[in-house]
Structure formats: structure tokens, C-alpha cells
Length: 350
Image (cartoon, rainbow, N blue to C red):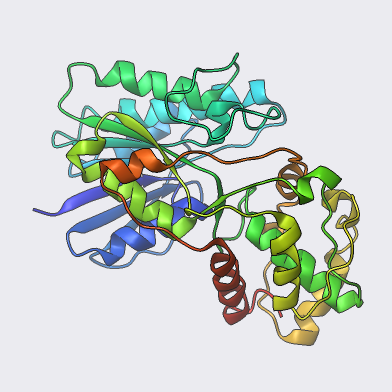
């Protein structure tokens, strides 16, 4: 019998890769939820446009999805402060579960996408390597609230849950507020157009800190594994590429991929220095015959500034997932090159 995935947040950097991975598997059908909807793939992928913050609209749009067996929740709404993130992000998950659980009689699993905010990584230096059983930090933190909701809701139910905790996710999807690889690609392309070297723009200490990332394709595989492996039921897992790096070694190599020199770091806000670059980008699109992608769609500058400001080690222990049976890995440097090449093939960057 086919498994039917409901991917909540199907148009983001994580959701896009998850939908593509599920659609490539022979025994899955996919329904993608997002505010904008999407293009259906007959027999494989169907998209549904829904306002997840509206419980009535969520119930209406999901009322006919009786065939769903697995919910993959990867949606996210940004807000200006950590406290303001809690209400909308918890409400969307609650609305989905409230709508789908009564109608999907064959529901087997609900998968939750989290991150290192569970460990307080966004607040400052945290214990590394972070482990899944590390104690919680003082709220607010919507990731913790979401997991607690699922744990409570699952009690006495036939379905199980899992929580995936990736590091910063690398992927080529546009229009996402947290896409570091695309931000680097646009920053490098503009630097080359202006004839300046590529400088690391973060805090001085961030250039030397120890980090890890998570490839979106790898994360998709891990998410499906955790949703279907009995050994992974009702647990959280750190999911990472499997290697560590420092920007001081990787940054010059990324610059070289674009044919640029890497000058010494210079701390600057990309959000500030890119504020006047939209006219230049439009000129570059015309000059290089690029796709008519809006500058805003490719601008994750606040997030890039945030990541480049981590002047402390940022990594977790992912051995729990390996002990439970997930053994995939990705080389981070190669991940960047493949994302850049994909953006170039699609005419997003020159």
C-alpha cells in the first residue's frame, strides 16, 4: 500500500527537497501544503494552498485528505523577536494536527522539524557537542513547545512522532528567510561584478569558530528514515553532514569557485551593504541573461548576518542517528559547490 505524505511547508528550502525526495521513492504519494500552492505532478505530487494560521481554513483544506499516513511538518513563520515566534509557529502545528488527525484514520507518524535553538545555540555560546538529551534552557522557544505538544497529543495514539534537529540547512530553494548558501552565492556574484575580493563579513571570532551544516537532500533522507524506522519512533535526532569546518579554511575555497580572491575578513552587515544593490542585480540579470528572479527572493541577509556572527563553536553530536540506523553523510564543501552549480544552471546567478 502506498504511503501518503503531507508535507507542511512544502515551498521552503527544507520542504522543497523533502517533496522531491519523497516523489522519487516508488511507494510514496505527496501532498504539499504552503501559502502559495505549487505545480502538481500528476500521480505523484499535489499542492494545496492554505493559511495555516487560520484554523477554519486549515480544517476546510485538509478535510478531504483522508488518505494521509505521514505528516512532515517543516513550516516556519518568521517574527522580529524570539518571544513573538512562539504563538504563530505553535498555532500552525496545532491547527494541522487538529485538522488531519480526525480525518486520516491511517495516520502513522508526525515528523517535526526543529533545530539547534532547542539547545540555545541562537542565544550565545552553548555546550558542544550538543546532544539530544541536553537539558532545556529558559523559554521562550517554540521548538520545545511544539515537541511538548506532540508528545502530549501522541499519548495513547497509534501514530508516533519524531523530531529532526539539523544545523543550518544548505539548499538552493529561493524565497526562504534562512538560506545561507543562496546568500553567499549572491554576495559572491555581486562582489565579482564590482571587481572586489570576497571578504568574510562576520565577526572576527566567527572566522575561526568550528561549525557544521546540514545538506537539504541529506536532511530529506533522514526525515523519511526517522518517520518509517521503528527504532526512531518517539525520539529526537541531530542530523548533520558528518564533517566540521572553519570559515577561515572554507571561505577562500568558496571564493575560488567564483573566480575571486579572498581578502582578509571585514566585519559588515550584509543587510546594510546590500540595501542598495537591487538596481545592480537587475543590470546583472540583463547583462548575463539571468532568470527574472526578484532580488528579495534571494535575499537572506539578516539570517546570513546572524550566522556569520557566531563567534563560538556551533556543532552537535549526531551519533544517535547512526546508532539507530541512519548512515548517510555529505561533504560540506562539495555541498556548497553543488548548490552554486545548480543556481548557475537555473540562471539564478551568472
